[in-house]
Length: 312
Image 1 (tube, helix red, strand yellow):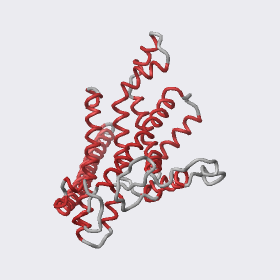
Image 2 (cartoon, one colour):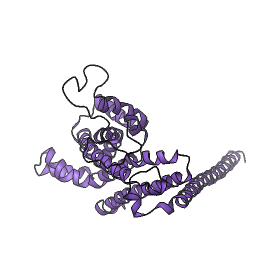
Image 3 (cartoon, helix red, strand yellow):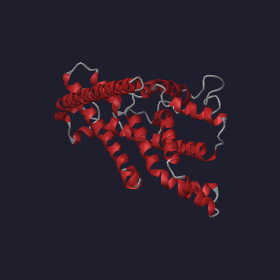
Image 4 (tube, helix red, strand yellow):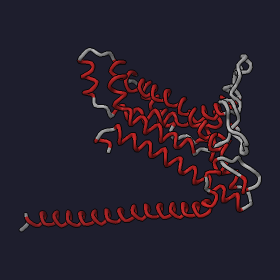
């Protein structure tokens, strides 16, 4: 009798703890589901409100007209094309630098304290507020100096001023940590056996990386880059910081021209008191959302098209 009593007590305690754990799991699942539903409902209400306010201005001519002080004559042309110029040059700057840094850190750099410090700093930079990058871009690209020593003008060189190229370079700095981390994860996902097989037939490290590792990692690299660019195209604070204009009645003709972008134009309309301009801001939001969803759709397509069964 005495030997069975402790065993029965232990079994009862286990059953009580198991029931309590199941109850906690059910409660947590309900809280998570409730939080998800609240987010979806709020997002749906916002989208419906934006669609209702902006649909009557949504037409092709909206993308062919420049901004105007008359709401019925105002358009999105300069902001739309300005965003395309800025994002195009941002991709040209961030993609090769980011992928090159990822390849070096993952395939060439020795695994020591310096590499770990670099990796930690890159990961931390991905969480720095965007306005900080705007301040950096203002000092480095617009004023042409790091704050100490001679400026580019003092050296006989021209700074980028408040141009498309300055905005693109600032946004490239903003998304560079994301591109590097995403590219590294894509490179890590390549099976080591592919590298070993390449080395086994006498290939050099560069031949292995170029012909085997990068093609395998390409879908993940492109997906991460496009998602980073999707973040950049919606940024406002860094571009306001470097002096992007809120009213531009022309499209950029070269990388050193002044510019505006879609978020800044939307903000310029939204703060005006006239209801028609606020409706124009809603129309601009719809266009921006279409562009963002298109970029995300391209990322999903690349993942499914080139990533193989494991990525689907």
